[in-house]
Amino acid sequence: MKAIFVHDRDDLEAQTAGGVQRCSREFLAIVRAASTETALFPIERSRAASLRLRRKFHLGSYLSYQPEDYAERLRVVLRDTAATHVFLNRSELLRFAPVIRTLAPQVCVVVMSHGNQSGDDLYEIAGPQGRRTGLSRLGATWQLGLDLVAESWHRHRSIDGVCAMSVEEAALERWLGAPRTVILPRLIQPDFLEHRPIPSRVGYVGTLDHTPNRVALEEVCRAFARKGGKVDFRLVGAPQAVGEEFARRHPFVTYLGPLPEAELRSEAASWAVFLNPILWLARGASMKLAQALAWGLPVVTTQSGSRGYEWQNGDLVITPDDAPAFVDAVTELLENPARLITAREASLAAARSSPPVAALAARLAVFVPAAGSH
Image (cartoon, rainbow, N blue to C red):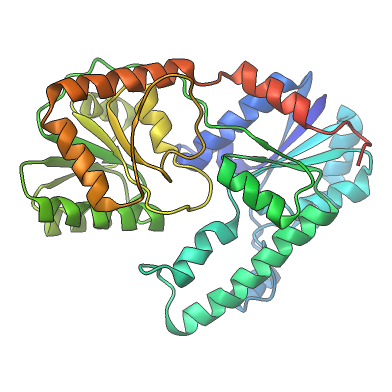
């Protein structure tokens, strides 16, 4: 297999590596391991006024990129590499598929999905703490319909398969019309910290204004406040204003800002429990769980927070998607040193028994259709 990996330049080159960047690098590592050759094809978001206007007035879907602007470059790269497969990093690039199909009908086009836009937007419109209200909600509802139609249209006509992050995402992909799906769970690369837990100290790291994170943090903080007891909640992430607001409203929260890697590792080593609450099926998967397991920290997660992972050993503490149940599980670990040791051992076992790059590359190689078979 000779591959081209089409990606937004920021997904691999951004100075600050968030969840999108980590997932992109994992997908690229899997593609490279499965291919005899892999060429990178970076793209950038379009600044065309016409696309901005269409986005503003909801006159289309997936309009961040202008695939036609890259047609000539794609034609040259497809020819020079003799590519058999093109992998589109993220569903947002699906409009590249028909362009590639026109340029090279025999090439297999696969989407490496981080989750679909509709996966997050549905909660923003219909969820109890979504941000779309009034006229904004009306426009977002129209846009959600456009997004669903576009997602399905391309899967039925120009995409040969989708690599999903979880069982749930794979089911949605089949519903949208993807002809083939494969699940590529998150990679866990053990990098165990020397755990020096401070009693009652728990920690969280993430993008604080991303709706799934924001809602979960709000609910968990309220549940901690209702339960009472001693807890030192260390909060890491950006934006700063959101973190400071959490600390202002909840006396047990200490906001530390977006820490550099070395400082974050030192800080996290002092957490008795790493918190990973996600309270509904938002798009993709929670990349934070991979970090907790890679560091070998005791972790409490939710059913939705644990989606997109596979391991053979390790009985992690996984609660329902319910903040009070989540806080009860955290409190039980903090009050029971033996249970805390068991939770750390479960994280170590899960990290060691998760599938490595080679195993996922073999899974991908079996999954992808042969060139020209569509």
